[in-house]
Length: 279
Image 1: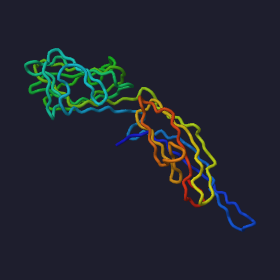
Image 2: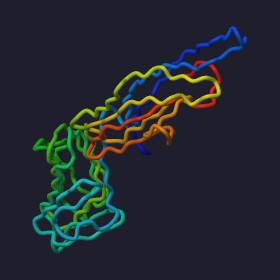
Image 3: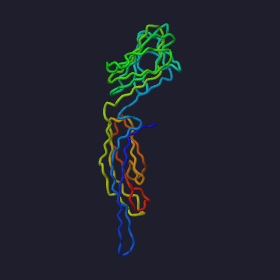
Image 4: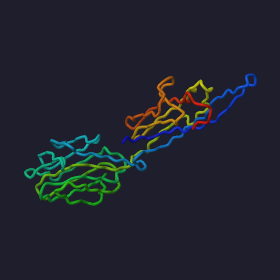
């Protein structure tokens, strides 16, 4: 499911009724004040926690070096282990009985922030006798090591660190090693920021039958973002990136390098409304 930062426009209004003595009829106008309030909501995440996940579904390494897994560069190195393959249930194969990888390491420095949980789905070939350990920025995560089995198993390492993730496999046997899935849970190093200016607009009005109202505008920008910005207006208002056309809701902006540059949003009261208060 797509995850967005959501800016909701909360709208409040008053109704003013004008009477014309000469014609004895009511001339009713909509008059509204618009207050912009920003809610920072990151669906499906707690605080600014993020989760990186990659599942290996085909042969990824054909030689030791760096491969990009779901936008993160991982470097594999080993002593020996000059064989690379793939099994559907066990994942990427490193080494073989004739050429075991020992030790095998996998590293990345592309995940920024404070890392607290690393989950690794891994295994070895039949009769494997080996272990795996994890450090982050030189800090050992717990448990200190796990014992590998022949069945693909997810192991969870916990701690708190930032910087290079180092996963190390060691063995006293001569067996193939396998990697199926990586999960890293971390807190973003910088707090996402979304700025609206101005924060209040007022004076939206039109005579009944003569809508929509004139448009007013505000700007939005963001930094340190890990998800899109979505801006939504309430039922009786509409928004656009251009003043004269294209009114809709919501409008979404995709960050580039964590940043959404300054965007102008136009707001107006929808046409066809009866006199009244609209929120």
